[in-house]
Length: 313
Length: 271
Image (cartoon, rainbow over all chains, first blue to last red; front, side, top):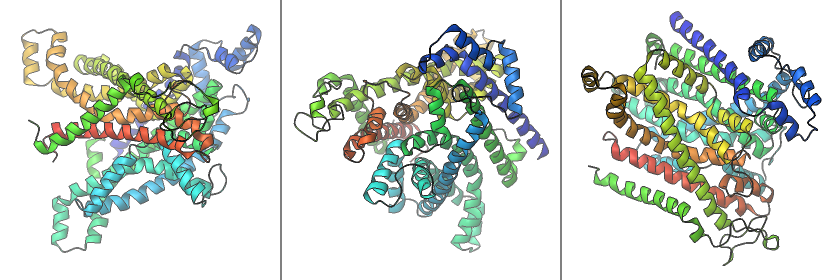
């Protein structure tokens, strides 16, 4: 286990460093000067003195490597710099907005697990039945729908026609239901399929057949054998989905006008606020890498075969 | 030979894809009206003979805009398909076949690019480049080639050990020729199949970016943007939002189904 852990920590640190390179150089590789773009987009008088003052303030006139070193040094102290436009503290803003997005994503994950485990198990146990075939057709259709369109349909039906939930905005827990349900519906097709296939496959395995031969109750077999075997692929996929959720949240936040990190970054991109962008890439990358790392560790704890292989795919 | 029970779905799904492509290719013939002609006097009209699906907030014909949107979506999707296949084949085969330092450098680069969630990465690239159809194309290509390149590299690694490749090496066939004659024909169909299965998600990605205002720019018709434009009329005119969404879903459904049937037809293991 310790060798496995050391390897995974090593590759995690490497990935984090990679993300910091990406965050820093992506904005500089693109053939648009951030300061000029900022002045043009915000229709400020682009005098040379004003632009130089901003470059001086942000340290953009220094050589690249010293900029990078300086930036990393500050980032390590959790100082992402000051926003181009509002001059507010980027780290502070990002965390505040990310907290909103994280709550929606967590609620979405909760919905995903509840919906897909129950439907996935049911259609696996009764596989090839009418229910199973209906489920497969339905999820095939849902998987083809764009999330923002689903969101509008939900707003229209649940919010406008039935009038039981608030349409848009942010505040109470009721505001969270529709956005997180939208996000969840986008992921459910994949998870229902994953759980169904995994359980159907395991039903043929010797240890499950043996359990059945011993006369164990079906509910015990499902809980102790089939669901446990589904856990590692499920956890790995859930960790990967965190990335999809954070991305999808941008779309959903726009539809439901939620002050989350996705909308924040869209506004920052429109204003060419590269300091915010840089911090955003770094923070999301960090988050995504750490979650995937945690999922790997948990999987290795559940399934000894993974740690013996050293986590190589 | 493809079995009969697999042949029928394959024929139906590929003819549906064919229909979509024909719609995109012959769009001027199919459109009842000019998709860009605005007519404020006729705004937000219902169904009529002149405007089969009604008009939008600027009095433009919705059906014509749907058909025009098909061209934008499909053309972009297919060009993304072609360019990502070329890039990922080039990178994957180079890394896998040459190996050593080249392989390490290219694969570390892939690792870094995969460290960010796909959609967010595309969003950031398109956002910094400044939106627009071409920038969206670049953004999507940037995020999609990586995964396929790694897959190809792993395929090539195992292929390198094959007897016939070893034999070619021993008899002094040049590296380029081995890659061209012995590796490419084996790798290419598999990648093409995988890309076909992924076509639907590319269409979704395009519509999502356009919805956020990062893809196709204003007068051009695109389904995601049509939905975004209809936001304010959700209460009074829900059809404005409903119709383009059905169009996106149907297109993605057809492409997903097409990918599935092609895979089933080629894979002897599935029923």
